[in-house]
Length: 200
Image (tube, rainbow, N blue to C red; front, side, top):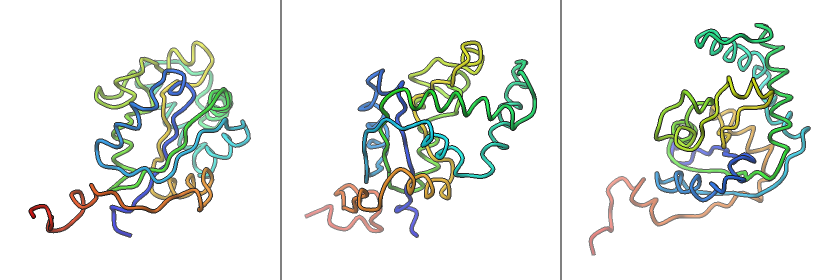
Protein backbone atom coordinates (compact mmCIF):
# COMPACT_ATOMS: atom_id res chain seq x y z
CA UNK A 1 0.00 0.00 0.00
CA UNK A 2 1.29 3.46 -0.91
CA UNK A 3 1.82 5.69 2.17
CA UNK A 4 -0.71 8.20 0.76
CA UNK A 5 -3.46 5.59 1.35
CA UNK A 6 -2.65 5.06 5.04
CA UNK A 7 -5.61 5.54 7.39
CA UNK A 8 -5.92 6.30 11.08
CA UNK A 9 -8.71 6.58 13.62
CA UNK A 10 -9.26 9.83 15.49
CA UNK A 11 -11.90 10.21 18.20
CA UNK A 12 -12.78 13.62 19.61
CA UNK A 13 -13.54 12.82 23.24
CA UNK A 14 -16.43 14.23 25.33
CA UNK A 15 -14.33 17.16 26.63
CA UNK A 16 -13.47 18.17 23.06
CA UNK A 17 -17.18 18.16 22.17
CA UNK A 18 -18.16 20.12 25.30
CA UNK A 19 -15.48 22.72 24.64
CA UNK A 20 -16.79 23.16 21.06
CA UNK A 21 -13.44 22.28 19.50
CA UNK A 22 -14.75 19.89 16.82
CA UNK A 23 -14.18 22.31 13.95
CA UNK A 24 -10.79 23.43 15.24
CA UNK A 25 -9.56 19.85 15.58
CA UNK A 26 -10.87 18.82 12.16
CA UNK A 27 -9.26 21.94 10.68
CA UNK A 28 -5.82 20.87 11.92
CA UNK A 29 -6.04 17.63 9.96
CA UNK A 30 -7.52 19.26 6.87
CA UNK A 31 -4.88 21.99 6.76
CA UNK A 32 -2.01 19.53 6.63
CA UNK A 33 -3.69 17.72 3.72
CA UNK A 34 -5.44 14.68 5.20
CA UNK A 35 -8.71 13.48 3.69
CA UNK A 36 -11.70 12.69 5.92
CA UNK A 37 -13.15 9.37 4.68
CA UNK A 38 -15.60 8.57 7.53
CA UNK A 39 -17.18 10.39 10.46
CA UNK A 40 -19.97 9.84 12.97
CA UNK A 41 -21.16 11.02 16.38
CA UNK A 42 -22.15 8.53 19.08
CA UNK A 43 -22.16 7.92 22.81
CA UNK A 44 -20.02 4.81 23.41
CA UNK A 45 -20.92 2.33 26.12
CA UNK A 46 -18.41 1.43 28.83
CA UNK A 47 -18.21 -2.07 27.31
CA UNK A 48 -17.34 -0.61 23.91
CA UNK A 49 -14.66 1.64 25.46
CA UNK A 50 -13.06 -1.36 27.16
CA UNK A 51 -13.14 -3.29 23.89
CA UNK A 52 -11.46 -0.35 22.14
CA UNK A 53 -8.59 -0.06 24.62
CA UNK A 54 -7.97 -3.80 24.90
CA UNK A 55 -7.83 -4.59 21.15
CA UNK A 56 -4.07 -4.87 21.63
CA UNK A 57 -3.32 -7.66 24.14
CA UNK A 58 -0.17 -5.76 25.21
CA UNK A 59 -2.06 -2.52 25.99
CA UNK A 60 -2.50 -3.26 29.70
CA UNK A 61 1.20 -3.96 30.27
CA UNK A 62 2.55 -1.16 28.05
CA UNK A 63 0.17 1.49 29.40
CA UNK A 64 0.93 0.60 33.01
CA UNK A 65 4.68 0.62 32.43
CA UNK A 66 4.52 4.02 30.70
CA UNK A 67 2.49 5.50 33.56
CA UNK A 68 4.85 4.12 36.22
CA UNK A 69 7.88 5.46 34.33
CA UNK A 70 6.28 8.91 33.91
CA UNK A 71 5.46 9.05 37.63
CA UNK A 72 9.02 8.18 38.61
CA UNK A 73 10.44 10.84 36.28
CA UNK A 74 8.20 13.50 37.83
CA UNK A 75 8.57 12.33 41.42
CA UNK A 76 4.91 11.35 41.70
CA UNK A 77 3.77 8.63 44.09
CA UNK A 78 1.37 6.04 42.66
CA UNK A 79 -0.78 3.67 44.75
CA UNK A 80 1.16 0.73 43.25
CA UNK A 81 3.98 0.13 40.79
CA UNK A 82 2.39 -2.99 39.30
CA UNK A 83 1.66 -1.99 35.66
CA UNK A 84 -1.42 -4.22 35.45
CA UNK A 85 -2.95 -2.76 38.61
CA UNK A 86 -2.21 0.76 37.36
CA UNK A 87 -3.84 -0.01 34.00
CA UNK A 88 -6.92 -1.49 35.71
CA UNK A 89 -7.37 1.85 37.51
CA UNK A 90 -6.75 3.80 34.28
CA UNK A 91 -9.23 1.67 32.32
CA UNK A 92 -12.04 2.23 34.84
CA UNK A 93 -11.50 5.97 34.60
CA UNK A 94 -11.32 5.87 30.78
CA UNK A 95 -14.60 3.97 30.57
CA UNK A 96 -16.37 6.53 32.75
CA UNK A 97 -14.78 9.44 30.82
CA UNK A 98 -15.48 8.28 27.26
CA UNK A 99 -18.99 7.02 28.00
CA UNK A 100 -19.94 10.33 29.70
CA UNK A 101 -21.21 11.99 26.51
CA UNK A 102 -21.02 12.11 22.73
CA UNK A 103 -17.78 11.59 20.83
CA UNK A 104 -16.95 12.17 17.16
CA UNK A 105 -15.18 9.25 15.51
CA UNK A 106 -13.32 9.85 12.24
CA UNK A 107 -11.07 8.10 9.77
CA UNK A 108 -8.39 10.26 8.19
CA UNK A 109 -6.42 9.20 5.11
CA UNK A 110 -3.11 10.47 3.78
CA UNK A 111 0.65 10.06 3.72
CA UNK A 112 1.97 8.60 6.99
CA UNK A 113 -1.40 9.35 8.59
CA UNK A 114 -0.79 7.49 11.86
CA UNK A 115 2.58 9.11 12.60
CA UNK A 116 1.68 12.63 11.53
CA UNK A 117 -1.71 12.66 13.25
CA UNK A 118 0.01 11.60 16.48
CA UNK A 119 2.41 14.54 16.11
CA UNK A 120 -0.49 16.94 15.51
CA UNK A 121 -2.38 15.59 18.54
CA UNK A 122 0.63 15.68 20.91
CA UNK A 123 1.58 13.56 23.91
CA UNK A 124 -0.94 11.92 26.21
CA UNK A 125 -0.33 14.38 29.06
CA UNK A 126 -1.17 17.92 27.91
CA UNK A 127 1.04 19.47 30.62
CA UNK A 128 4.21 17.95 29.18
CA UNK A 129 3.40 17.94 25.47
CA UNK A 130 4.58 20.47 22.90
CA UNK A 131 2.94 23.81 22.24
CA UNK A 132 1.66 23.72 18.67
CA UNK A 133 -0.01 20.34 19.12
CA UNK A 134 -3.76 20.07 19.70
CA UNK A 135 -3.31 18.98 23.31
CA UNK A 136 -0.49 21.45 23.92
CA UNK A 137 -2.57 24.37 22.64
CA UNK A 138 -5.99 23.59 24.12
CA UNK A 139 -5.57 21.65 27.37
CA UNK A 140 -3.93 22.34 30.75
CA UNK A 141 -4.58 18.95 32.35
CA UNK A 142 -1.92 16.78 33.99
CA UNK A 143 -1.51 13.32 35.51
CA UNK A 144 -1.21 14.96 38.93
CA UNK A 145 -4.57 16.75 38.59
CA UNK A 146 -6.29 13.70 37.11
CA UNK A 147 -4.99 11.43 39.88
CA UNK A 148 -5.88 13.97 42.59
CA UNK A 149 -9.43 14.16 41.23
CA UNK A 150 -9.63 10.37 40.68
CA UNK A 151 -10.50 10.72 36.98
CA UNK A 152 -9.05 10.12 33.54
CA UNK A 153 -6.81 12.75 32.05
CA UNK A 154 -8.81 15.05 29.77
CA UNK A 155 -6.85 15.37 26.56
CA UNK A 156 -9.52 15.99 23.90
CA UNK A 157 -8.56 13.38 21.32
CA UNK A 158 -7.69 9.73 20.77
CA UNK A 159 -5.43 8.86 17.80
CA UNK A 160 -4.25 5.40 16.76
CA UNK A 161 -0.69 4.59 17.82
CA UNK A 162 0.39 2.36 14.93
CA UNK A 163 -0.85 1.23 11.52
CA UNK A 164 -1.79 -2.16 12.97
CA UNK A 165 -3.68 -0.50 15.83
CA UNK A 166 -5.41 1.85 13.37
CA UNK A 167 -6.64 -1.07 11.27
CA UNK A 168 -8.09 -2.83 14.33
CA UNK A 169 -9.69 0.35 15.69
CA UNK A 170 -11.19 1.33 12.34
CA UNK A 171 -12.76 -2.13 12.04
CA UNK A 172 -14.23 -1.75 15.54
CA UNK A 173 -15.65 1.76 15.06
CA UNK A 174 -16.80 1.64 11.42
CA UNK A 175 -18.50 -0.80 9.07
CA UNK A 176 -16.85 -1.00 5.61
CA UNK A 177 -19.85 0.69 3.95
CA UNK A 178 -19.43 3.73 6.23
CA UNK A 179 -16.00 4.49 4.74
CA UNK A 180 -16.14 6.54 1.53
CA UNK A 181 -13.54 6.33 -1.22
CA UNK A 182 -13.41 9.55 -3.21
CA UNK A 183 -10.92 11.95 -4.76
CA UNK A 184 -9.97 15.43 -3.59
CA UNK A 185 -8.55 17.94 -6.06
CA UNK A 186 -5.75 18.79 -3.61
CA UNK A 187 -4.43 15.23 -3.90
CA UNK A 188 -3.01 16.19 -7.29
CA UNK A 189 -0.77 18.75 -5.59
CA UNK A 190 0.10 16.56 -2.62
CA UNK A 191 0.84 13.31 -4.45
CA UNK A 192 1.19 13.80 -8.23
CA UNK A 193 4.77 12.95 -9.18
CA UNK A 194 5.27 15.66 -11.85
CA UNK A 195 2.62 18.23 -10.89
CA UNK A 196 1.28 17.93 -14.43
CA UNK A 197 -1.62 20.13 -15.40
CA UNK A 198 -1.01 23.13 -13.16
CA UNK A 199 -0.31 25.43 -16.09
CA UNK A 200 -2.90 25.69 -18.87
